[in-house]
Image (cartoon, each protein chain N blue to C red):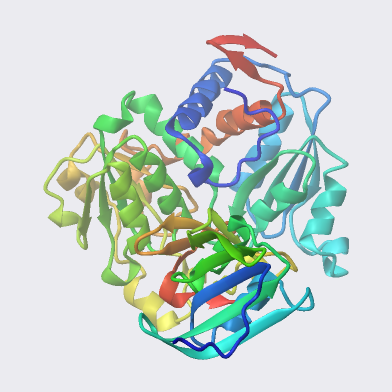
Length: 148
Length: 313
């Protein structure tokens, strides 16, 4: 029998299959700090990925446009919505139309590095994932992404 | 097509139909339509870095159409020196005018300005990024000579890596599937991602290092200055400075019908003796900045409204 070291929740959202050690970053991107009860598991064994992280968020149902924000750091994550102890929705992460306030622009002469404004990147191509800064229009490959 | 209230920030925001519409409006302005349509309107020119042609042509364009101009020509102005943010400057100025033209050394500054302003913003150059009205006037000049841009052969020579003019124009021409030749030293090649984009839009591209290697007869050769200010390493600059120089002999080799364009200012990449040839159209190109900018100012302020070929002002 599979034994988890984090207890199950009966109501809320479970984010599974997060690449190991990125759970805290996921929480930061989703803005979940100090917003209710979270259970975080880091470094669990995973048949698919070797190691994985898992986050359980009680009494909060994350919408698709919210969870898609983590596609840059956890593209393989799965989202499980639990209501009254039952799994009512299971979905994968998809690429959003744009990333706001998540990615730092590598161009030192970009206005986002000069003024206090939120960064914004649009998707140039999905496969391979290439982003474009809305402001300076520089291209950014997914391997060069720096999360803010 | 309605441009009223629309900011003009990047060529990437434009469709082929937008470019044709602006060009056709500019053509009608040049023929004398829409006189004084900007009467009672005020343009703010916010030039955070120096410019001669662009600033003067915007100011002339506004005045030729009956409008007024306020603004500054250097960042050495009170509010900026006091440390005011760009967003605050724009929010304030947008209450003083009907349209803003901005040039700024930081890339993306014009996009930010358009997001916070209550009036349309026209990008007159943001660092190495975009300068869309230069592209409009380049296209307009080409369309005066060649009605079908999809059928012509255009070469670009010089700094193809850092030159924003070349990037914007080659992208715009790719919307017409124009065949393009890129001639530059290896270290100043067109960025790969732009080459990919242009190909995706349907243009054929050939990349060469020497003008002599062009086998076909080009219709236009667009010459650019190798910009010293874009180089961090002066040794790299010295290696490529003066690499290409267009002379009467070079023009004979390229084909006697070729048209030579240049966004100006030039340094020594085109010999002055070329100026008097029919091939040289770079001063005409610069002068076309007036009707093109008149058209853009008229369209974004809603002072020029064209529907189904009709006109009202």
